[in-house]
Image 1 (cartoon, chains in turn cyan, blue):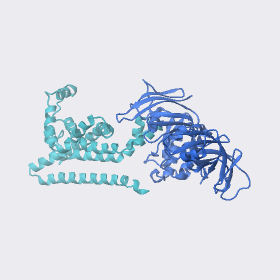
Image 2: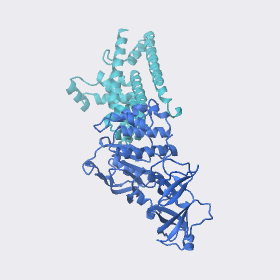
Image 3: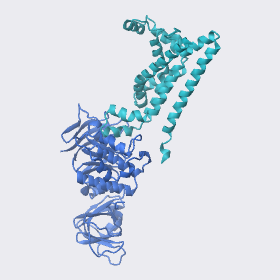
Length: 227
Length: 362
């Protein structure tokens, strides 16, 4: 039970770090995909969506190769931090960011794309600088997209399995997340403990999605229909 | 001191805009043209909303807004921009929309938000969700919001085209007052000659991306070369004085020079000049003053100019009535039958006269 709590703690840390990184990195990406007409966008869009259709093991396999100490990435990481990248918590974070990318980027991108250009232009002519426009207009008007993206990315990272197993292994206290711990219990025929973790994940994920839909409901109603 | 714009733009779609203009920094300047003539694009260039799409120079008074090496972004230009859509921020109520602008003013004075709210009649709408307002209310809030930012120059792109006549005149009379009292220069884009006639002092006409006419509104709207190119109904505006005393209900006597003009409307009590508009179709010409006619308004006039397009069955005649210009549309057959020529004295029969002044305040 003690090790299960440890796994829960690691899982929450992983999901939290992943979500924070996605907020920082995924937001500009979503802006580019949602608002730019640059041709690079047509290449990036399917790339971002890939994790939705690929088996996690495919991504995990290539990330494992990229993280090994004899690659450029693995080597620079080792000189910078002194540790190997593969089978570390940091490797899990990188993998999760890539794997959960579409779950954050797509709702935010959709919210950005549906922002009326005229509103942003009006704000500009009223004296709002680009940064000002982001915080005073874009952020509040895209609120539902941000909430959806954040919840989905967090929930999706909680349930990650295949990619974790490939690049993180199963190191207690370092890379053993809830889904791996659950797998271990099943392997060891400890169905009672497995059930506790499985039911916990199930209920938490449901509650999160329930809250997400509830939050988005009032934002949908006072639309054009209220006149 | 003025607004100077010298731009040349070519879009891949084939649309082009070439303009080299100077617009006075006082009064209201109209930009007139059909859709696709480039008038909105010209206005957006002045705002700085068309970055990267064109090459040229834009300067306002002593400030360069744009030239070969500089581009001042819209939020640093002291402008107010109002488009056809009010573009109110949906997550803010009316008062918050106004405060958004007031807190970002580029002037060092504190904006008198209360006065703007009073002038535009928004007191009862301050806490309203802006999405529930009517079209006219929304546009009034948009105008108030632009004014709260205290612009040095107000740019309006067909702001009234989606509104009903009453809201239109309400807002137009406010814009006139604003210009008169506060001296805020306005550039007003429109494809409605009625709005142009009512609002503007100067006029710029765009056609297919090129400036075809520029001058005072009064001289352009009575220039046959310009009005002949206008597809909509041609109207002339006459400035009259209200005649005190002896008014009948439903009929107002107006003084036009030494002549009298009857207007089918209840008497309006005003010392101001009353401006009326007359459609060119409603003006016919006779050589003698007919007495056996139902037409009330028969005025002596002099033919100043005859616009003669060889092929057209109808032609335009510009008349002078006590120094004011009235345009008549007659058929070529009538011209030949009466053998009219420039400089000739005739009588203009006016079938109907409409008031151009705004409806009274509600």
